[in-house]
Length: 230
Image (cartoon, rainbow, N blue to C red; front, side, top):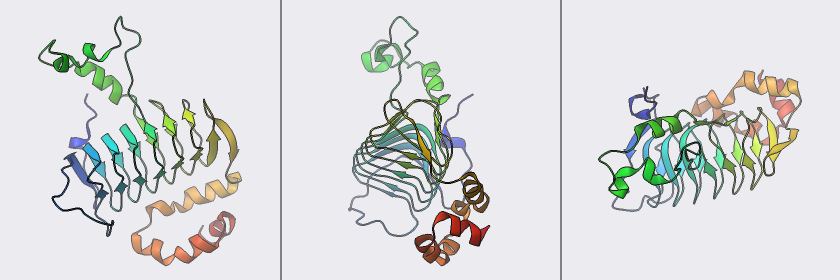
């Protein structure tokens, strides 16, 4: 069964891009809830939520990004589910290219035959295999500069992945990881605070409620925020 995004029902404010075509005039600085895609970016078969931002020379393929998430310059994501409010730095690779290492030939020609004039169709089974190993990011995940997230990995809500890390195993919510391969460094908060933030689920708040609570997001630490809003 195909897992392509083109048939997925869209939430209010979300947009499906079969293939992004840059506007004739530069869009300028991002403004308003409409997803903003750099004219130098490539986006196809992907869904972007309101307030999403995609930087220059970044590529998205069969990727769904939740509201307010951004991915800056020179990054890529393929076959990925990205939650809301994710912060993705430069030179990040989410679900980078994979190859059929169990076969006699792992080169492109075996599954991209059309490009090599060896057949009239590509190997759809290979691409379904790629789709079946989607990367999933929870909400409010921060991926530092130069991070690589390997196929099939889930990075939990509120987690931090340090610059340059290669993540080959799932990351628990609210955990800071780093290194090659990545390993847990510490949890951001005690368990009670983690549970409180998950119960609040501020990433599901309406835009107006977020704006009303902005002073508390700025002034309160996580403990005090949970105490006030749980």
